[in-house]
Length: 286
Image (tube, rainbow, N blue to C red):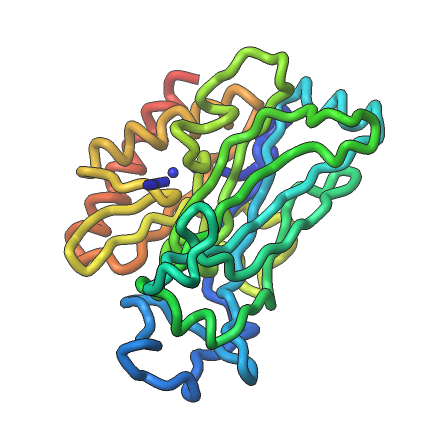
């Protein structure tokens, strides 16, 4: 399943900032045996802690619609961000009823005005890692209400399902609205992809510093934004346009910058130039 995403609390309050940076708390493992059974996925630095594999850190920011934020606040409701990590095992004996090997899971409850769930230090056994056919395992993110004020889930949120090489060290924006609200693409995202991906700030960054969009390129030149493959720069700008327009509609005074990683110099420059033109066009129409 391929996957896309923005931050600023645009939520119709404004989407809050989102980003992408490597996990500085963990270091690439030098102890995991590099056998064929334990070879790491290309471009993925897995860390180890004793007999365990440490999942790369990442963050999920929840962007609610205005109506959703108002109702959650009025009812003292919380938000649950649930992460489930799984992979495809080599042996049928290790498969569950869905054909997967479950690796780990964690739920983070967001209270009050908190909208960012930070996943770090999650681990699973090296034995399970060796059983994977593809070492580039997956995460599935679901977002629901905390069911404090109602037995039923109140939120209709986008899904996110990405491989570790795509989510490692990044922050993604997932949109939510009330179940009874009409759906809009800039709130909930498209086809289960997040709304946007941002470059996470460094540890020294001043809190509240606007985050840059993050676009990554694979060795074969493929462009990825928010987990979704972009056929070309034109498609990338088309995906970013409604995100930026939503920010402006929500009252944003400044639009995010952009960072590229892994892109050839010419491609990175072309992406930045096209993005500059896109921002200028939107700001002139404001």
